[in-house]
Image (cartoon, rainbow, N blue to C red):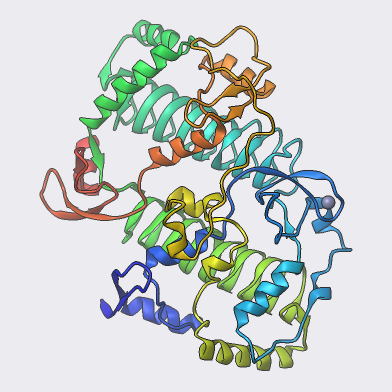
Amino acid sequence: MVVMKRVCPVSGKEFGVAETDREFYDKMGVPVPTLCPEERMRRRLAWRPSRFFLRTCDGCGERVFSYFDPRLTTVVAYCEECYRSDEFDATVHGRSYDFSRPFFDQFSELSRVVPRHTSNAIQNENSEYILCGHRNKNCYMADEIDFSRECFYGYNIQKCQDIVEGLYVRDSEIGYRLVKAENCYNVHYSRNVFHCSDSAFLANCRSCRHCLFSTNLRQKEYYVYNQPVSKAEYERLWGLLFGGDRTLVAKAERAFGEFALRQPVPAVLQNQCEDCTGSYLTNSKNVRDSFCCDNCQDCRYCWDIHFSRDCMDVNIYEGELMYESLHCGPQAYENRFSILTWHSTQVTYCLELNNCSHLFGCRGLKRKQYCVLNKQYSAAEYADLSVKVIEHMKSTGEWGEFFPIAMSPVPYNQTMAQDLLPLTPTTVGEYGARWLDPLAPDAVVAGRKAPERLPAKRPVELLTCVETGRPYPVTGPEWRFYTRVGVPLPMVAPEARMRRLWRTLGERRLYDRRCAVSGEPMLSTYSPERTERVLSVEAYLQETH
Ligand SMILES: [Zn+2]
């Protein structure tokens, strides 16, 4: 039940605050938000860098992979080794709180001297070129990747092997261009596929084997265009598709796109969910207005979290009682307005912590308690001071607001905000954000387009992206994958490949529309203009089972 309506000062949109929202805000000790949910999301995501660069570690001087553009002179960043070293102790930058100045100004000053981790990639083997990854081997150019081997390009890849261009792929092996796939083996060019194998060009399929160009199938084998075929016919088609011929693949892609447009689609993707709104949700209860979450309960306005409960406005990772936070976990508890806190409890306005608790306005601390602006206090002093800082922040209008976009050290177009809520160089200023044009390539090369057919030898020269004109390599491991599966070389550079995956995932927004079967009103990620036959979850289940 909506108990309050507010108008967002940024978007001008009216948004409602439900009774349960207000209970949550009271529990977290925070005021009702001033911005609408989408602008709060934008503000958080503008703090999540998502581009790949090489830069120099400000500790040891090594050239390392990073999500910070080397041109960002206000960012001090340490490589994994320097960051983890006991010699790096950010309490040396501790300072007293100044009640005559705004909190965010003081936090900004602290931020300019405390190093960040260059990539948030830790404990990986032969995987120097990944971001936010943990325990991977032989992986590169992937972001949010854990416990995986030989995976290249993508976002959110968990426990996988041999996945190239994957977005939300889990427990899968050998896959090319997959968007939302779980427990799949040898599946390519597919989206929303679960427990499938030896298949390609599938959408919304479960437990299928040896299927091609099909949608909405359950437990089928040897199906093409949703019709049964002989084993020989399937094998003939597979042989053609995976002979490394781009023209054939492009034709197949177009034909499947046209076929899929005529098939029913579920309004949202929810699997084993109860009382949820949103899409790409699994095994969750009372999760509202959220996307790409699994095993969650009592959450709202969350993206990319799992095993979490009692969270609002949270992106990426896991925890309990979190509000307006980004990339916190594992086991985050009572995190407010914080970013990248690992194993941290009761922290507010903090950035990049490791095993900490009871901190306010701190940055880069490890195993610390009771600090404000990185300065150590006793438990009693901390309790007293943090209350006074909150009162001060209320007087400056800062309390309850996430770190402003303008304070983010990363230009908007180098963040996940640009990936998911894009702006242009001309509109970015209206949001207080910055834009930085991409670096020119190191050298102008007389590159050439990827050949039509998979060549017999790996091209050693750089290829030229047909979308952006930027050069890109085909590495040895990547080449072996393409050859093994039989797919043509990509024609676009890695960034354009990521954009293609995000487009396939679709919008993370809910529209009011009506079920094509029952005419009942429902929420869907398909906007009313979309021509697909969009079915309510119930009607969809009836048609596909
Ligand atoms: Zn270093």
